[in-house]
Amino acid sequence: MTTASLRRAVALLVTGALALTALPAANAVSAVPANNPEPRTAAAITAALNENVEIPGTAWMTRPDGKILVSYDSTVTGAKLQSLTKQTRTFGNQIVLEKLPGKLRQKLGGGGPIWATEGGRCSLGFNVQRKGRYYFLTAGHCANGTSNWYHDENNTNRIGTVHHSSFAWNDYALVVYRSGLRPGGSVNLYNGRSQDITRAMNPGIGQLVYRTGSTSGLHSGRVTGLNATVNYDEGRVAGLIRTSVCAESGDSGGPLFYRNFAFGLTSGGTGDCNSGGVTYFQPVVEALNVYGVNVY
Image 1 (cartoon, rainbow, N blue to C red):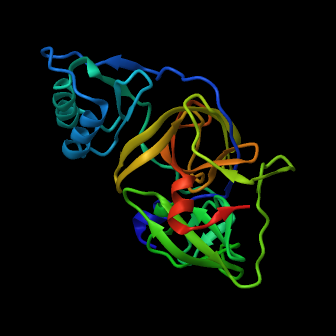
Image 2 (image 1 turned 30 degrees about the horizontal axis):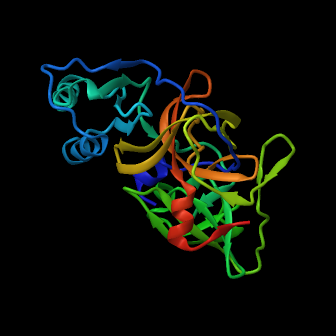
Image 3 (image 1 turned 90 degrees about the vertical axis):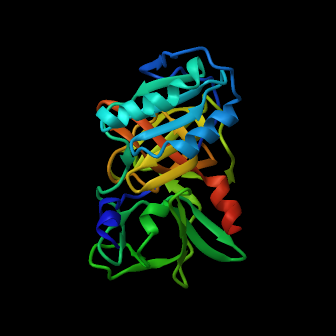
């Protein structure tokens, strides 16, 4: 695992979720247009941002009202902020700017029960299966550059081997369990109970969601956006679920869920579980379709 991958190492999480109503973005302020340009579609604006803005610490998504919410973190200052403002002003009041607290980063590090060959730690997301063979999903940025995963820091009890990983643009990976292991389909809630996961789906705006992890435990929030794009230092990821649920270092790769529904894998965000924050998730349905596996 590379040095960057070690900084992105993470902790074991679990799964389940359902739906409610859209929440307004915190700290959102409308960009002040220099003129009154012709309106463009949300898809056209998003395509332009994807083409022209590659500033780490920025993210964007389409709000329910059709406007594009462009977020930036505390590292986007000076010339970077001027460049971002210049790009967004061309779309007038179709863009809403939002400053995020802290740094937009992948939720890595922390103490977790699955360890990479090279010593890095990552979160197990959902157990899945295909034709009687068992696997688990985790974040792609966790699995890039490594091979085997273990239950212990000393690498004596091997869980499985990375079958495939995808990062950047996507953020998911598939690990095949070693022969003889038959893991259950439930997730640990870190309160003495577990939650069975039987279905996977894409959530809606306002969906009540839960996320658990060995670093920060069980936390809840709501889906505040879909199809979000995030520019991490390590690369861009698109098509993410944006939520108000908190996460901390060690929570990357873990699942987003409610009841028996699987929704996503923790990718990254800002803030922590003391002050709150914004967390983004890789939709699990996409990963299941790519790998041809199912939750159970």
